[in-house]
Image (cartoon, rainbow, N blue to C red; front, side):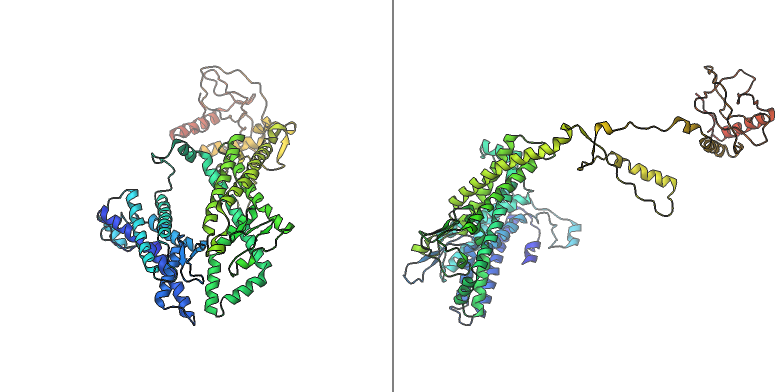
Length: 615
């Protein structure tokens, strides 16, 4: 079944709009047929394994059709009763509802997925996709919705007719109403998903106030908060139902063994109990909210106790219901469940109200929390209406929680706790965020720790590139607890000392770079050579300096030159014929001056003049 629903119908590409609509109808038919087939297989397996079946294979298949209709909410009728009066069966196993809803949703979601298939393509044929072909026209949304819904309802009408001759026929009006509602909702959700779940534009018939509420930014937050609150209530309901079942384990076991004496019958009872677990969760949530649930006409179970005389059939899950006429502190403690649901709504709303997209005001936060409480109440009211119903006439005409009582209690609890909780969390989180600004504490950027060096030094260029890639890490500000200092403890930036530029080591490095750039024509600097001091003379404007390479002083050994002058020793212009000035008291010999001129001429011819700096 999974392969069929995942890959869809193996049909050729549609050649027109009518073919696309026919494919949509077939998808609806297949979705309904798959649901019927799954339940028919389960019922047939139980019928085959039963040693004393009550009917033949036709009766088993009709029972499967009736069970499929019950999964849509259709009310069944049990004609064979002791009193002779037909008894209605209206409690819907909520776990079974998921099967037809999911199949109809998938059929509608993939209804138009093959309109762009190539003409010669079937399924996943890649060759046909590469060749290409004519593409079918896309029908309107309403046409696809009608086609899928009609295909599904055709199978539903056939199931109603087929089950009418079985042990549990369906009420015609109830079948028509519930089949249409469930199918339309699932198909509409599937098509909405296929078109990307758009929120706008809304149809023209939608009223203006409703349109503004639906497109407002608080609506999304309210839906999510309400879903969180409903999830907390349902989870608490499961916990309460499981606790009650464990508390009354002896009575539940006795009822289970008495209902069926053979293993096939016990298997059927166990499967039915599993299908009713979501119903038990909803009943537990209603019990925690306070209104409780009906145990027949004139009897109700609440945390305060059981009022009236319960009239329930023998079933394992119903054996776990409370039977004490007066409650105790243990039953009163279930009031913590709606409080937790309200806090969940408040937390979710406050989280959005203080988000990064912009803080909300108190009024908007309270209104969003109120909308979330209303959404939670609507979900609980809907599930409550589906989880209960009649199981017979007279005393068994009403079982389960009342939807309007449960929905009203959910609204009061979640709104009463969620709105103040959202406002309180909004104030607290806003206060924590504003503490550094009020106290005058300045956050200090915490740079990322440098990685420890590994064996084998990386090349200089690679290291520089890595440092350039990590420049942003020094600009990252991290807000962590305890990583703030007072403003008075900050110290100004400490620049490097000025004298470091003129020390002997730095001069030797710069001179070696100049010598390498000149092609080896410049001599090496002698080790330990000092730099004589000389007064700084004012430069002569307009006279270019041919070279800033310091000349070799007279009287020094051959191959010894002085290092480069510092930046404070400006370029000095000299009169014509006197040559370039060197250090004070050390004129450049003529032979060495000619060698320097040849070196400069060779460097100029090669287009490299690293030692020349012209204004």
